[in-house]
Amino acid sequence: MQQRAINAVLTGVTGTALAGMLVAGVAAASDDSAPGEKQFLTQEAVAAQQHDARQGQAQNKAQNKAENPAQKQTENKTPAGNAEQQQKQREAAKESAPAKKGPRALLSGTTTASYFWDDGSGVRGDTGAPASGKPMQKGMFASPSWPMLTKVKVSYKGRTVTGFVGDRGPGEPSHRGIMLDLDTYTFRYLLDGGKPKNKYHAGSGQGHLKELKWEVLEWGKGAGKKGKPQPFGS
Image 1 (cartoon, rainbow, N blue to C red):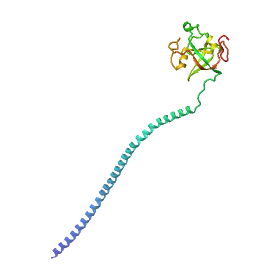
Image 2: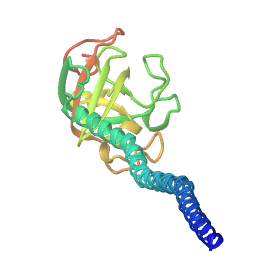
Image 3: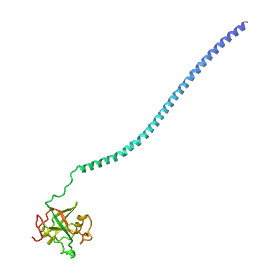
């Protein structure tokens, strides 16, 4: 009887002790698992942040790619646009700038002109080499009275040529109002803008230009008389 009572007490004590140990073990197990869960949660947060960061970088790259072509296009257009604008400004400046004027005429008037080509060939009344000593050439005119090497501008029907006095003439025709001889090329150009048949023949049925405008731009230093043209030998 006494032994059973002792056994019962021991059994109770042992059970109580075991229960306490079980409770302590469970509590310890609970405490041990807590850091693992916290660590798992922290890793999840880091992974989420990294994912968000990668997403943000990808979005930034996409945005940069979308913006850069437009920026490059703008940059590419800018120089061309500037060049075009500068060209327009230059053209506007040219239009607004006053037209350049040629030399002022010292003397001007109108006359009837014929043509010649004196090179010593004897063709078409050739009287020999030009009196100025210069070879016959385009732009050489003959005057019955003006000083040699006088600079003269002639105009007819909107066409203009500037030449110089290099010979004497016309002769007898100057007494009939024909006060200027033009080289064959100048004569034909003023007539219709064409070219002569050859240097001795203008290639047209017209041998005179009436109402030809002349302007003396500079008097020559050779022999002759300044002023209005005078008939040959007067």
